[in-house]
Each structure stands twice: as C-alpha cells, then as structure tokens.
Image (cartoon, rainbow, N blue to C red):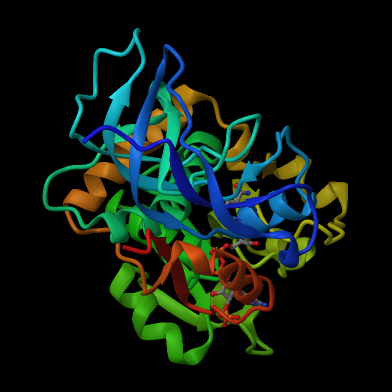
Length: 332
Ligand SMILES: NC(=O)c1ccc[n+]([C@@H]2O[C@H](COP(=O)([O-])OP(=O)(O)OC[C@H]3O[C@@H](n4cnc5c(N)ncnc54)[C@H](OP(=O)(O)O)[C@@H]3O)[C@@H](O)[C@H]2O)c1
C-alpha cells in the first residue's frame, strides 16, 4: 500500500520544555536517493531524546522537528540508489533525530540506508527497539572504546539500568567476569543478566567489598549512573585499567594525576551520537545477534501510543520510569 500524503507525528517547532511537543499532521517525508521510507512500528523514548528536544545536547535540527531516535519499521519505499533492504523488510535504526536527521516519532520516517539494519525473523519489534540504544551504547563502551578482553574483570556501576543490563549481558557473554552495583531489590536481575557478583551501591563499605571481590583490580569500569567518584573508581582500577565515562554530564571529575598515568590507566569518554556509521553498523551486528539469541532482554517495557510522546518525555525527565523502557507505537 503506498504511503499517504500526511501522517501523525510528535514534533516541536522550537527547542525547549516538554510542553513544546505537538502531536498532529505533517507531510510524509520523501526518500532521498540513499534513503528508505519506513512505516513505523515502534519507537523508543531515550534520555537523549529529551536532551535533543530541550537543547541540552547541541545538534543540528530543522523545524518542525520530529522527536526521537530509535525505530523499528517496515520498508515501504526506497530511493533510486538503494538496492537493499527490500520493500516489506523489517529493519531497525538507532541514529535518527540528530545531526540534521528528523526523528521517527511518527507514522512514517525516512532513514539513510547505511543506518538501517535487518531485524531477524522472530525478534519482537518492541523488544528490539527497547534494547537498541542501551545495547549499542554498551557495545561501543566495551569494545570500541575499552577494548574488552575475555580475561578482563568488568565493574558495571548501575548494573540494573538499561545500559547496565546490556553491559553486563555482553561482557559476561564475552567471557569477562562481571561485578555490578545495584539496589538490593535489583540484584537478582543483575545476576540473571550475567553478573558474577552484585553489590549494593549505597553500602558504606562498597569500595572494600569490591576490592575484596577483585583483588588484582578491575580492568574495565563503566559508570552508567554518573554518580561514582573518579577517585573511588581509580582505587578499584588495575594496571592498564580503563574507566568509561558516559553519564553525569554536569558532574565534576577530579583525581590525582599520580593515580592515573604511572599505572597506565585511561579515562575514556564517549557519546553514541559521535559514532561513525561503520562503528554503529558493527555494534548493530553484535546487537542483532544477541537479540536473535535472546541474550539481550529489557527489564520492563511499557507501550504507549505515539500521541503520548509528550507524557513519555515528561515521565522520563521526572524520573518516573525507573527500570521501565517506554515504547511508543502508532495509535492504530
Ligand atoms: N554516552 C552515551 O552515549 C550514552 C548512551 C546512552 C545512555 N547514556 C546515559 O547513560 C545513563 C544511563 O542510562 P540508562 O538508560 O541505563 O539509565 P537507567 O536505566 O536509569 O540506569 C541508571 C542506573 O544507575 C543506577 N544508580 C543510581 N544511583 C547510583 C549510584 N550511586 N551508584 C550506582 N548506580 C546508581 C540506577 O539505579 P536506581 O534505579 O536504583 O536509581 C539505574 O539502575 C544516562 O545518564 C543516559 O543519559 C549515555
């Protein structure tokens, strides 16, 4: 069935607060020569979507700007230069909505073909879209930036979160020994994701417990909470250990240079928005394989209609979605 002229979309006319989100009709976008047009099945709501919408994360946007980043959809049209995927194929994309690209919180969306990946048969589109962003982030942290090896001991601070769960599952699957921190009620979840040992992040003797669990030090430490003190992280780190900083934008990081370079330790920061299309495609291959194998699981998903995009942003910003992935689906 050909795409209609107009579609429902959640969009903003200028960057700002959540009240700026409108839900209404916009023209269905047209494919450029290297694009595919997708009929949207599911869209995730990520923290970064709120950062882009509010202007906190600076990136090129054009108005009206359709919000969002991650989508699963079916190809309904393709540009003249596109030879694959085929019309009718189900694909996913996790890099719309920044760098001049429109987001996908709409009934149809275009995506550059080099940014879309096949979704294997049997993988639930809602699960796939829920996992895409945290899992691709985890891949970039562990493999692209920290160079994870099977012999490594990894500490995931915030192990029960969306990114933390994916970090744990991936690192454990790679053969690394994973330590994670979480609140007590989430320990079982972290263990089920693959953590060998889980620690209460609020325990006053957390550092002592972690040092006892990893007497030779931690090789890779990823803080998904943005709340770990850098000096504490360095106390845990092995010779040649790597700390990955990926959250806590406004947090000051302070340490003694002597705790870093004389032990060949590195501090690595990254944002998925800077990943190249090759890096994203490599992460996507890994994520797709683990999705097909059932290794990547979201903790809890709540489905909402596209028209509830504003409410979803509000809840995420208010911290009311703890442990839950909000996924938007076309209203009918
Ligand atoms: N750099 C990038 O490219 C990139 C990509 C994706 C996400 N991010 C950022 O990464 C962060 C995590 O994202 P997410 O989706 O995984 O969020 P999330 O699901 O909220 O995970 C954060 C986790 O940190 C835990 N936590 C809170 N305080 C802690 C503490 N003091 N010590 C250890 N853990 C603590 C939380 O536990 P409770 O639930 O018990 O509070 C939660 O499980 C966000 O800030 C997000 O913006 C960055």
